[in-house]
Amino acid sequence: MHITGNTLLVTGGGSGIGRALAEAFLALGNEVIIAGRRESVLKEVADANPGLNYVVLDTSDAAASKRVAEQLIVDYPTLNAVIHSAGIMRGESLRAGATELDATVATNLVGPIRLDGLLLPHFLKQPHAAIVTVSSGLAFVPLALTPSYCATKAAVHSYSQSLRYQLKDTVVKVHELAPPYVQTELMGERQANDPHAMPLKDFIDEVMGIFQHSPDAEEILVERVKPLRYAEVNGGYAEFFKNFNDQMAAARSGE
Image (cartoon, rainbow, N blue to C red; front, side, top):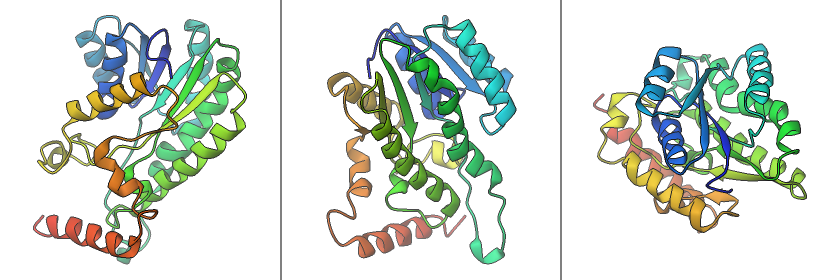
């Protein structure tokens, strides 16, 4: 991915990793549009970052995605990149029976696939273009407390590989960003202030360094996520999975 000269859409750009990436790319001189469901939040971010544009979009809404994608292409004819940072992560007790997972699947998985389909014909006409999917370290070692989230992120990893292969002879590069546990409000204030989570600034600095020094990297992996990413290939996966989940469950037992 080129780190300059882009017109870049960032979904989930109103907070967390999405906002931080949008601000980092804006600082490098890219034209950046953030998207999200809450206009008040998007406007606040845009006001704090002169030159940053925004569009209201719920990526789980098929009709809205089509309408907004078509308008973005008209308003930003040089649009050539998207970062799929919108996401939902919820704890689930599977023993309790059926869970409400429609929003999780629609936002984390269906939304990015649909939006890619809407934007790709336009991207293929650009001199260079990029799609950045956002999976997770939990795509490779699931956190049993959040099973649907982890399943969608594993699916994003699989989808990213297929998308990359189908676009291998085109101008569109596909990068998969797999974050570790980062200090954001994805699961509330506890996560944002958890000393065990990677500070957001440190994460973004490392990610942008990878984009700069390894622009052809298929997977964007900071050092802290690599134990999860390579747990299976390194051997002892079953023990790693059990220890990881035992530790995470113990950390939350008092909540």
